[in-house]
View (cartoon, rainbow, N blue to C red):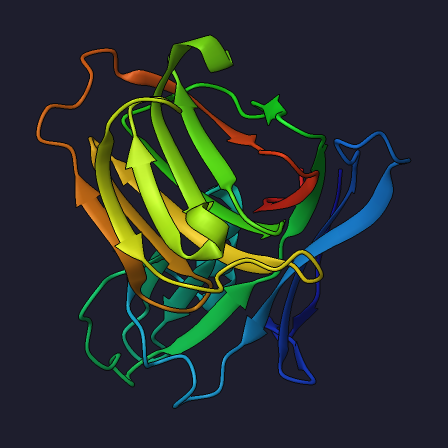
Amino acid sequence: MLSRVILRTSKMRILHNFLVVALCSKVSLANGSVPVEESSWFVSEQRGVYEAVQHQVLASSVAESRLRCAKECLMDERCRQFCYGQTTGQCVLEDASILSGSGARANSCTYYTRQVCNSTYQLGRFGYEFPFPAFDDEFVLDFSVRASGNAKIAFSTDGMKENINYHLVIGQSSNTKTSIRRCQRCPLLYQVPVSGLLSEHEYQRFWLRYDHGVFALGKHGKAAYFEWSDPSPPAIPVWFVGFGSWDRPQEWVVYHRCI
């Protein structure tokens, strides 16, 4: 992995509003295409644009510099943006999920959004894919999907579709509902009527957060439209997250750290 940091007088160089902390790497796409060169950097957000929503905080500390804060974000797979206070040195790392009912952000620091690599997954009819390693209790997914409906996110105890304990479906019932069940044919646990979330012609981006039986799902850059807490979550704490399709092929894109 090639790591490159551009410095000027012991400070990070700002070029065309980009905070450059480049990590270049080769990423093999899951659909079998050849490796492509990708890079990760940060975009300085304009005040008034990024302050409208409050992201979930991963960590907060006092950093020596903006460079140090950027490095801490790059080292955490979950980090999608950070806030750095020029006068206070406060460094706040945040993930892709957004808190509901949040107010305006403080204007005492500057926000930087992380540019990330992506992997693409192509599913045929009635297909499942579990591309991630197991996680314990908490998971944040930043993804896009192109589908006419019934885009499924499955939580499995062993990475197999036969052992799914949560079955979350976006665009169910002709792209009019989002629902969750224990399995595909299990009784409905919760659903929200929202029409037109998916498109078979364009990618639609979402974020999903799972935390000890609590689900939050929203469109990219917006607060959650689907929130549900399991009153009796399964006892087995280790999960595998995957995607599933229905009667038409689908394409999924997952945004992640460049490795």
